[in-house]
Every structure is written in structure tokens, then in C-alpha cells.
Length: 283
Image (cartoon, rainbow, N blue to C red):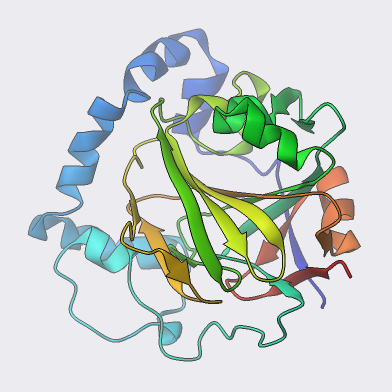
């Protein structure tokens, strides 16, 4: 499959640059990243008056509405979590294909023998990410995939295989932006609020799927009543903004497309859609 790329160093907005690149901005940032502060924008985007933002949001983010169901939206968030038309995100029926759980910009990292992977100048260890040393040890030498969702992406996400839920965990934290500018100073994925589920999948073994909140996007909604799931089944959605999904695979379970690794090393993210084939099962 031929992939498009997105350069991670594209220019950020003036407001984001101010918050993360200046001393006065970082002082303000200390307040803004608190989850309690994020509740107000979340509340506002669920009100009827927030519908006034929809038209401009579509224009600024160049959103193709032909992919989505034609309905009347009750609020901006109602629009933001809009549903797709049937067939808009086809899912490969080949059980050996690793599919993307969401739309987004994808980076791929190999987890080293010491359970560490690097994103720009930040070093991450899996135990800090998932807050479970025993579980983290099971992913030594495995693969970490990071899907960064942007405002114009579809913000619902799915399971990548058939299987069963082993466990859920929610980790409290702050809400930094997940744009690349933040990685220069903060270990975002071990600081932000996040929740994950351990999956026992039919074809790829034990997998961790984690959703990470971001600046003003603390609301992650998952279907907590699920105990078993099927390939392509909806798992949940993010409200207003963009955020991130992190997926962890154990060693020798999946082979990620080499193009994605190459793009990551060259400071490019790979543009993908939910259901795209991004790798294969290791036989």
C-alpha cells in the first residue's frame, strides 16, 4: 500500500507556540493542562450554541462531508463525533492483516530490550506508560504504534481483531497538547490522562490499546460493557479536539510495514485511515 506522509515539524499556531516556547506561556500552561480547566470548553461544546462553530471548523480543516451521514447536529461535539456512511472505512477481511484502529498520523517504534522507546528527545519506558512493571515486561522487544488524531480526522476508533477483554485501567494525569512541539520539553504520554485495555486477540496475541487525552480534550468515551469484541467493532470515541491512540504489541507477533518505520526515522508521520492495512501477522 502506498502511504502519504505528514511532516511532524509543520508550523504550529501562534497560541500553541506561545504556550510551549515562551516562559510566560509555560506559566499559563500550568493552569490550562489541569483536567478541571478542560471541563469548561467540554461543557461549552456540548451546548446548542456551539453549533455556530461547525461551519467554520469544516472550512478551516477542509473536511469532506461526503464521507459522513447527513444529520442535524445538536452541538459542536455532536458534529465532532459524527458517524460515517456505511462502507466509508472498509476493513480488511484477511485475519493476518494488522489494521489501523483509527484515522490519524502514525509513527512506529521498536521497543528495546530495556523496555524503552524514544520519541524525539524524550525517552519512554513501557512501565511508566502503563503503570504496571509486570505487564510491561511482556512487551520487551515488541512494537509501539502511536496514532495522533487531528481535528479533521474521524474521531471514533475500533478494535483491530476478534478477541476478549483481559482488563481496563484508567490513569489520572494532566492534558498537554499531543502536537510535536510539546515533546521538546515534556514526556507527554507518561504525564497525560489516559486509559487502556489489555486485549487477548485471536491473531496477534496480547495487545494493549491506550487512549490519551490532550489539551482541552479530557473526554475519552469507551464502551465499558464490552467483554468480547470483533474486528472493526467500535470501541469508543474522543470528543472536541484531537488526541492519540497508543498500541503495544509483544515481540514476534506483528510485522509493521517498513515504510512506516522509515517515515518515522525521517521525522515524518504516515497518514492513515481507520481500517487501512499497516502490517501483518508474524507466522
